[in-house]
Amino acid sequence: MTKDLTNSAVDRQNILNNPYALAEIEKAAGIRGIPFEGKTVVLKEQVASFFEVTLRTVENYLEQNAEELSRNGYEVLKGKRLKALKLEIQELNVPETDFGNISKSPQLGVFEFRAFLNLAMLMRESERAAFWTGGCNFSCNSR
Image (tube, rainbow, N blue to C red; front, side):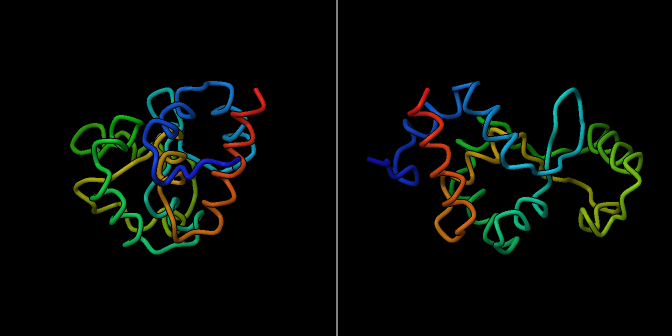
């Protein structure tokens, strides 16, 4: 029986604390992130595109679940850390359109994979998120 991850913070956190499940789901998702400070991060625009929802939908979930998502790797970069991320993006030699217009942004929200998956488990509007959370239940229960 599949649990409804949108309603259970405990079930979501159990999955997010399982390194085996995280690694398997990250490989399967195939989202292209940005190497930053020894980890890979994705931007809100990438998350919205991946889950085929609007940027406003992602922002609504961030507002409603700020504490949980922050605990799992969502953060807003400013100052020197933001400058460092912008340099990483420049070095990737990818057109800025792939990441939104970030060159003049005074702050930028980024998701580590745990926060990305956490958001997927919260999201109700995305068929793609539903697919990944279903895959997550299978991965976690089969271990």
